[in-house]
Image 1 (cartoon, rainbow, N blue to C red):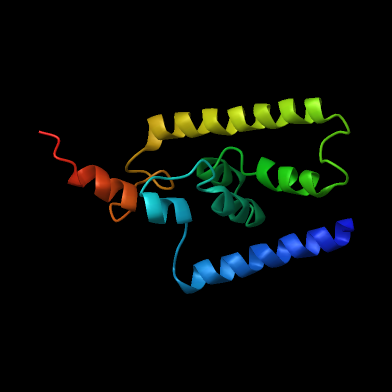
Image 2 (tube, rainbow, N blue to C red):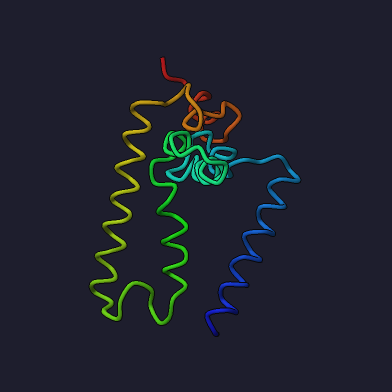
Amino acid sequence: MSFLKRLLLCLGAVVAAGGILWCFDIHCLVKEWLGLPCPLCGTVRGIACLVQGNPVDALYWHPLFWLTPILMAWHLLPPVGFSGEKKRNCWIWIGVTALYLGVYVMRMILLFPEAAPMDSNPNGVLLQLWNSLPLG
């Protein structure tokens, strides 16, 4: 499949998913279902703040908001994304994953559970299960 077709397919999927989530007033599926914020919570709001000319607010919503679209675009490039070497490609993705998880842990320590976007959803399935446990 050509790059343009893959790009259009990805954009179409993002628009369709966004439309469905908007119709059901769901902001983050992970937070909606589990009750806890995901490692990417705040990315879209960060990008929106940057587009509106507020880079400081964008960094508040997610410090790596700028990296997500770059990674998505880079992954679409043929044939395997970052480089022709699969081993190097694997180490790059491991590094990116470690970076996102590190930022997630720091944000959970500093912001959870009261400050958006790292606030909790008490109606989430995981939190309801936790609250239903008989922890004496």
